[in-house]
Amino acid sequence: MRATRFFPALLLAYAGVSHAALGGLPEQFNSEGTTVVSSVSSAVSNYVTRDTTLATGTHVREYVSGDGVVFAVTWDGPFLPDLKALLGKYFDTMGAESAKLPRAGRSHLAVDLPEVVINSGGHMRAFEGSAWIPAEFPAGFTADDVH
Image (cartoon, one colour):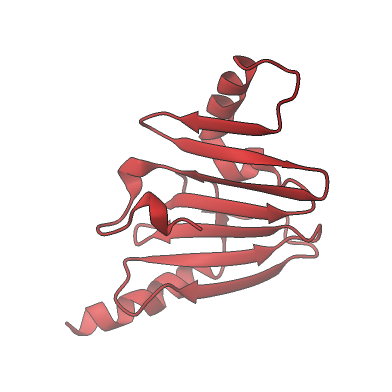
């Protein structure tokens, strides 16, 4: 029981020193000009969220499991973040799915596969998106919790 009380604090400390790619273990973003705020989602949660405002003004939120794996990420702001860094190995999946779509008039990309869900859209100065790995969701977490 005592360890359960300290679990969120441990996750917060762990998430406070790093960023991670979707589905990966923590690694550093280019931190120059970024503001990082980490928070525990709730006292009994089995994950933490990490909010970062990049130097470009774009906000990134990472959802990190107790195992230190990023299972979801969201972004919104005036510039797209480095999606290769955010999506990790799933960046190639996004590229492959994007190549299947017609080029004209495309402002939104939706990838809905069993292994990953990616939504990205917007226009200059107003981009937003989210990505998650359904199989990595902690107990009690659903896609509706990604925001």
